Length: 308
Ligand SMILES: [Zn+2]
Image 1 (tube, rainbow, N blue to C red):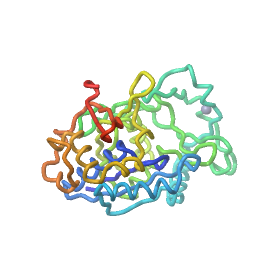
Image 2 (image 1 turned 180 degrees about the horizontal axis):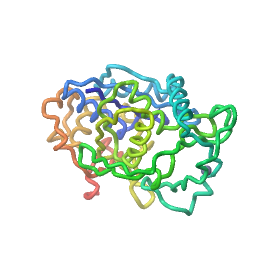
Image 3 (image 1 turned 180 degrees about the vertical axis):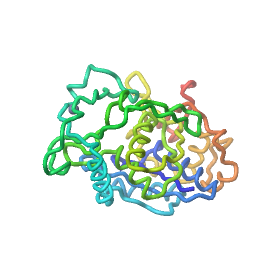
Image 4 (image 1 turned 90 degrees about the horizontal axis):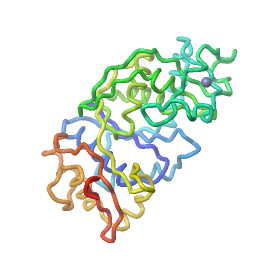
């Protein structure tokens, strides 16, 4: 069993990323599995090397270790080879449609605007996908994927119709998430994907890409998220409680205790080390509903969404 924690390094680590890291690590280590840290840094417009370095540091501070660290931006040759394979199969096409053109159309399961595969049938230029100045999409099969994850979440979807064919290479040349994730999981021999529920609507698209590339589908499990109070509604936690503040206020065992308690894995938020949670780790204890993280005078507090 090989699992991975794959954060994008587009900002500081925060309680939500560290919760995800802890759950991935506990799941793998409690089953005697290996676990890979993959730093997802392809989006050069949003990532910083300092944030990647901090992610490694924050996980170590919490008490997590990895069998291997993979830096996604060093995997360009594998991503290009996958695009070549899709091009050889006649699956790639350039798309000039703007996001603005889709706005106001049909909502996709992930909340974005669906793409109606308008440019299917357009040919790549003579120089292939590398020579195309437009975004490149991949033509998926129109079939429905039937899939329920290990937590019982139904991920069944017809991604080509519900979301539209995904972009695999952006107009600015960046390899898109959906392609990189399936290629990198394949090359790290990942058997189990544990990740936050916000990614769940992308799973069927990734399964379709796996089929096109002859990649076996791993097991999936999607866990609850930490939310933050926003303008009138709760949103997924991002930058409001950065690691630099967490570390100034708490030590690693204190944060581990708060996260373990929030995840149903400890009766109290008393300080602990991840290794102490291994013996009793069980997904049955982990709540299904999202929880709310707040920065208080005592530091980080995590509460039930219902009790806020
Ligand atoms: Zn288009």
